[in-house]
Length: 112
Length: 112
DNA sequence: GTGATACTTAGCCTTATGGAACAGTATCAG
DNA sequence: CTGATACTGTTCCATAAGGCTAAGTATCAC
Image 1 (cartoon, each protein chain N blue to C red):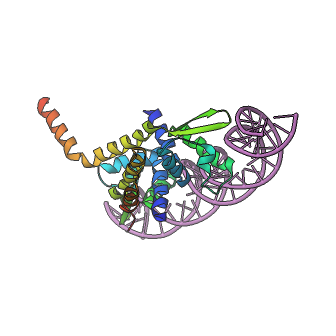
Image 2 (image 1 turned 90 degrees about the vertical axis):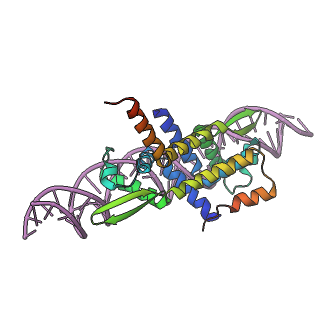
Image 3 (image 1 turned 120 degrees about the vertical axis):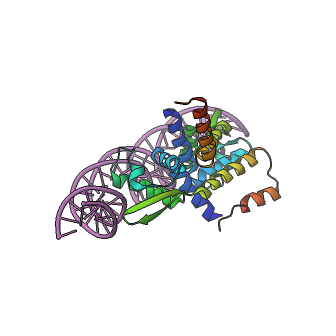
């Protein structure tokens, strides 16, 4: 739970940067090398690498080095955590009736 | 489009902090005052206020002052932007990326 | 082996973030 | 009018984020 919260911190923070979101968009259509990914951006490579590391640390991508080329791929599972958080959030505000109903049902079965 | 990206920056960044996510969770079950919201947190009020301002700037909450009490409420519409971004992302990796669909994706939630 | 390619490491800089304290201002309750 | 309540404004601090350059390492192509 605590760990889940820290993961969310990292994930949301990773998504908060347009460069990183663009990289994720690009990786959505298939793996790519660092330099392929970096090409569209007007940025020094070490700066770009920081974004890649950030994305990898957040778990949104995974990377692997073969020879001198590091290949990056998207990690779809991690996106599900965002989905889950959104669902939970909506469950709170849209599920009020449900929650109330559940509460009523529980108390019907378990009277004082 | 440009504006949409900047909004996403703010939204994701707002979501990247556990205090702010907790506030959103609390506001999900109804509006509350600043001090009500602040009570659970071991934090000076001015520090807490920064989070409230951040949330308001991101558009995830809206606030209103009556007398000396500022009441905060969740702004559900803004959460939809996250949803939309996730949908677009999934659309890419599920291969639904022909020209028409890309066009629709980019424009369906273009800001007002 | 040489040179180009593809990162990587190490510093440096500026701004933003998340926290603190302390001193206001504006209401409301009596 | 007075005091408590509910913020608000200001300033400070330490660390992290996002950019840069310059120099290093490890492959690969010839």
